[in-house]
Length: 119
Length: 172
Image: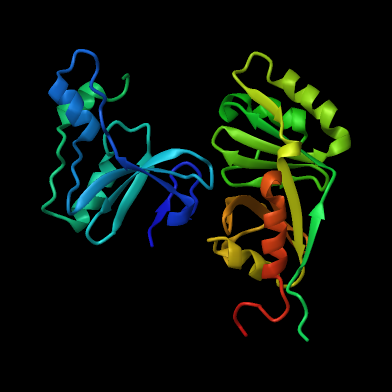
């Protein structure tokens, strides 16, 4: 049983109140992208054993999409955050690090800053 | 023979108006037009006749007697002039049930994945009742449940089934 706290309404929603939306932080490949990149955007997913970022919709509630960080092996939830974040925020990263000291983010800060707010 | 857990009664004659707007911008105008304070997240405010519920960060639900609907729609439209907003009459889309009695919580607890003891008065909880979407909040003597009119028969049936005599939750 998975219980996630919706960051928009603060409700602790149980799995049946939510709708899964797959991997989070996918970036669409536009018309300039190569066929390989577009195919990867459509089909390639990380599917890790361990820390994973996911989209969820609070379907039987406020109806908003939000993002969650959790472990696919232990089902431990590290935190949830609003879908307006282009990358997981610092407190989520800290929460993951507290439990998984070896874990490394697979995005870089410059990358995040360059693309984040005004996009 | 044990008593039923709670009375389940379908309530008619309530109008519901959905308001979608940027609540931080239009909150004051809406409070004035509805005559009720704007509820915080998952809150519901009431003056005994009208209620204003928080549905999502950009959505409120005004519940009021059918007779006041036309005037309320008009004043809301006026209050939201110039805003990117929506005022929609949803009365016909909804069904309302009152579950009243000392063990009304048990009836809802069987149907919704919600921790009822932590549901404070003045909280509107959107969730599900068995297989259909529903929202509920505390009223004097029990809980009021709203659902879709299209599933009203089902909702009424599961509520009265869950209230059957001798089916109370712990302590048994």
